[in-house]
Structures are given as structure tokens and as C-alpha cells.
Amino acid sequence: MGTDVRPADGSQPAPKRVIAHLDCDAFYASVELLRRPEPRDKAVIVAHDGPRSVVTTASYAARRYGVGSAMPLSRAKRLCPHAILVPPDFASYKRVSRELWAIVSGRLGALQHLGLDEAYADLTGVEKPVRVLRELVAEVRGRTGITVSVGIGPSRLVAKICSDLGKPAGFVAMGREEAARRFAGHPPKLLPGIGPKSAERLRELGIETIGQLQRTPLETLTARFGANHGADLLRRAHFHDDSPVETERVLKSRSNERTFDEDVASLAELEEVLRRLARELCEGLRRRGTRGRTIAIKVRLDDWTTVTRARTIDAHTNDTALVTEVALELLRAYAPPRPVRLLGVRLAGFDEEGGGAAAPPRNAAQLALPL
Image (cartoon, rainbow, N blue to C red):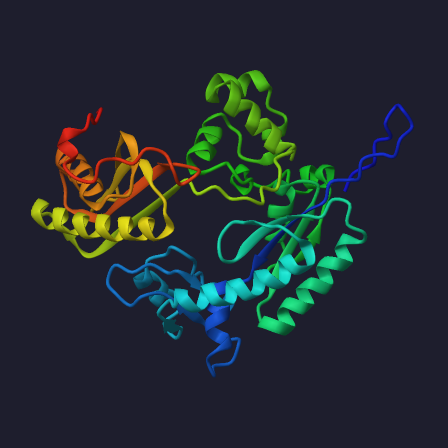
């Protein structure tokens, strides 16, 4: 996964960088199968049963029929009508997640968590890291019943892609140069950080594979994407990535949203839902002692058009009355032109120390709230 570079002064070379990405296989479905009598090879779909529900996750037996996360449940049922439908139980998932990652961190130290079911670990300088990880995967499986796929590389970028290879129970190690060769024929969207919009803009330039992106002149990319994004695309295509494993995660935002079973056209009804969402959001923030300055709403129309509106106030707050009033003003100013499928409220721009000046608890109209 690279070679040591010996410094000119003759001192010992810096150890090769070794990053691992650990990803639990179909985590929610795996937790459900562990506590149910059905055989492990059964098709299981984790989702609330409703006309507007989407799939939270699915077992690999269900995925073989084309069922995937975020798919409308109605379509998943058509693809796999014999699947067992299980409502999500996030309290259980969090409990198993805590147990699992306690085992992992006990062996590997600090982790960068990406959610309940995946994390990065920096094993640079660890003796025989591949053996350590294989033993860890076996221990996790034996103690929790959860299977973890592992990707190992010189960077988070390579490790992330490797962990998806051979799932379930994948275990792949690869260097940067090998990754650049092996994935040259794959579409650019394989690379983390290249989403659907960037992939479409690349296709407009005739770039449909990572190999083609590797051979594209930097000038062409910067002309289309700008200096920073264009250079980043080329770096990713060659699998260059020196981003650190960040073991202290800074909370950037918290949100609360609701998808309606039937589209809502009534502004009065939307306002009532928004009030409830804001209240629940602020109650959770107060329990954590967290306050933010940027208040935002998210509105998804019945044609899937998604709009966000935000306003930054003068001081950090988690006051229900203030957040609610600003959110309502944003909703009324937008005035959804079509029935609404999803509505949400978000607070961001947190005070890092939990201190800072708090916003007055009442009457948002007394504050200067720039548009």
C-alpha cells in the first residue's frame, strides 16, 4: 500500500499510512434477524408500513430482488412480495451499535464514526494491521452476531471504496496505484464526493469512466467546475487523498422532518406541523445544551421539488418560540406553490463551547433578522 520514504538525514522513515473503513453489513436488517426466529437467509425489509414509506434497509436476500435503501416501499413490495416487513426499532439499533463499537475501539482506539453502522480507523504504525482487523471482525461477529466488511488503504478514499467490494463479509486491502488501475473502467460516481449532478456534468464533457477522468486536462475541469472543484475531481480520479481520520466529530446541524402520508396543501395545516417539529427539535437541543444561529426549513413538493430557506439570527438559541416564529416566517415567505410531501426544520451554526450569547427567549420580532 505504498513505500517508506527515508528522510535525507538518515532517520527512520515515516510509517506507511494505513486507514481502515469498517462497515456493518445491512446493519438494521441484521439486528432484526438476530432477534427473530426466521432463518438468516430470509428476505427482510425494514420500513414503516404506509403508503408513503421508504425502505430503511433490506437484508441481502431482499437486495437480490433489487430492493434498496430509500426505495419507495410500494416498489419494494412489488419486487419482493414474499419479504418480511419489519418496522424500524432505532433504540435497539443504537444499543447494538454502542456494544459493537465499544469492542472495536477497545482494540483500535479512537474512531471517526459516520453513523450507527460505519467508522474509519487510523492504523498507521500498528504492527500487522491486517491480522488485527481480521481478528477484530471475528470477535465482533462472535460477540454481537454482526458481520463487518472492511476496506484497507492508504487513505479514507481507498478504504471506503474497498469496504464495498465483496459485501457481505468483504475484506479488501489495496494501494492507491492499484485502485487507480482497477477502477479505471468504473463510472465517476463510484468515487465518494462525486454526486449525481457532478456525474451528469462530467457526462456532458464526454467523461463516463474514472479512467477518462484521469486523462482529462486540469484546464478542462477547472473551466467547467471551477479551480477548487476541478482540481479535487482530478485528485479523486487518481485516488489521492490525505484527509485525516477525525476522531472528534463536531455537530454541524440538527433537524426534524416529517413525510406526509398524503400531500398537504393547507398552509394552516403545514404551520401546525411546523410548530410541532420545531418544538420537538428545540426540546432535544436543550437536553444536549446545544444552541444554534441558523434556522432553516425544508419543503418537498408533490413533484419532488425540494426547497430550503434559511435565516441566521444574531445570537445562538434553542428557544422554541423563537425558532418556531422564524421557521413560520420562512414558510409563509416561500408560500409553497404545490401540495407538500415533506416538511422539516433545522438548526445549524452551533456554539462550539455550548456557551455564547443566548438569544432572548421570546418575541422574535424584536430581533434583527436579516433576509
